[in-house]
Length: 76
Image 1 (spheres, rainbow, N blue to C red):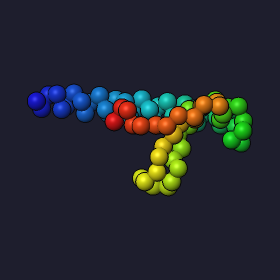
Image 2: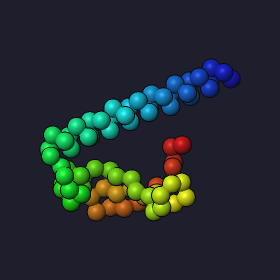
Image 3: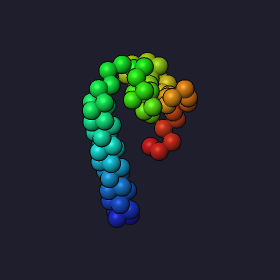
Image 4: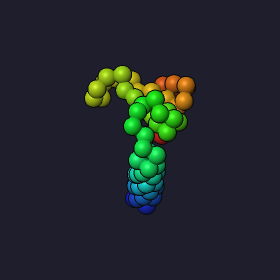
């Protein structure tokens, strides 16, 4: 039972690390391409998360290009 919990914790940690590496690469690309406006293609093509309210009470949706989808935290 403990081994399963340790394996799950390790997998979660690995995913967090991979997300951080990916996010750093995205930021580096945005800086290199001098993206400075939300209408810029470099920003517009990214997968972006938005909340309808500040904090924890609102709905979350994702946008990429002209697509908008509700986010339902499928992987948590």
